[in-house]
Image 1 (spheres, rainbow, N blue to C red):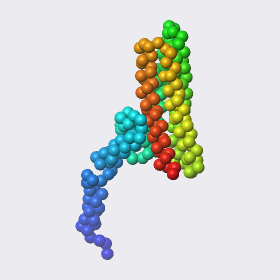
Image 2 (image 1 turned 135 degrees about the vertical axis):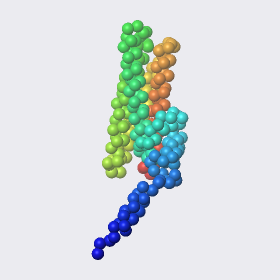
Image 3 (image 1 turned 45 degrees about the horizontal axis):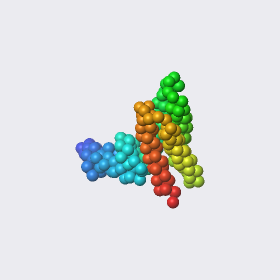
Image 4 (image 1 turned 120 degrees about the horizontal axis):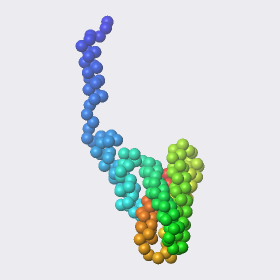
Length: 208
């Protein structure tokens, strides 16, 4: 005997109400206020271990929806930010270097050429670090240790290269060009330093 039509309609209506029920304000769905607040707090707490926590939080908080509360995503995005800033700095110094060839004193021209070389190397090292970070979810424990060791080594080398750039201007006469290059380089170094700190923290948590 077939069920009566009114009963079927009632069951369908009840099922529809269940699936369309409003989400409670307390539930942590990806875009809920609670989830956003928790993610922001996660980023702020994570940035607390860096040398420049304010720079870290400001640069990463805009990517909160991508980061959620995932340390790997946080670390990858921090490296991506470092890479983007380093690329812009390398292009900027390259342009200045060409201008310097046509009029700057020899020390300034040499410092600019060396700075470009150092930032170009840093870009390669950070790019390699990012590539390794994108592969860590598909490897076993020994491979993870090896890849993260590479990331730590390359990010550290990138920071050293960036610091070498500003060191090269110590013997250059003070002036607008020197001040501008060193100020921009310092900002980039802060992002790289923060990314390295987050890499080290990620490794410490994943490898006892």
